Length: 198
Image (tube, rainbow, N blue to C red; front, top):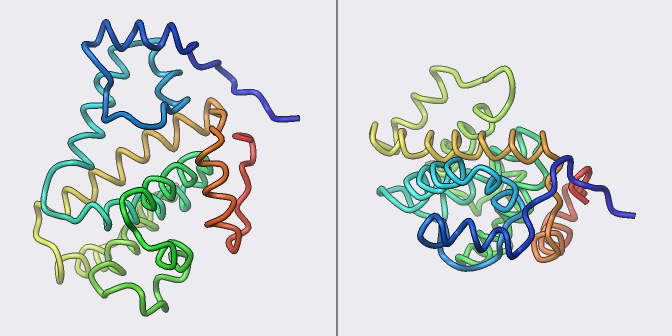
């Protein structure tokens, strides 16, 4: 049988009531994430998180595709399978070629990634582990391709995912069917499984 989340998400009706109280959904329509339905037990937390996520992912000059790849890699480094599943699903929906996602675990050697992307993904990998492993060399590599504002953007994605990685792994958030299917298909070669999110 499937495992249970440590804290249940709100029912659809209760979640809709919270969204009405907040003045609308926290982000564009699409899959309602159990992470957000759980966070909605404290609407101000959901509102604040949604603002952070919007600022991290929807503003700035770093491409949405690279931000999406960074989000997958940092979640992989942190070990959050819920976030890995969601981020590959989001990446595919936003047009990232499946071949690039499948090659993501070998970004250092795959010719599907540029030097700029490698620098960003190396940074994400080092930033996702505990204790943090980002070194001066990681930043020097980033600086060859990105300005300080863009480095702040990349760090914003890493840190936003850090919140979600801790949130979802600490509460064993139950993975919805769509991202479960996508991750099972796209991450098959990496040995991915839903773990406690299944």
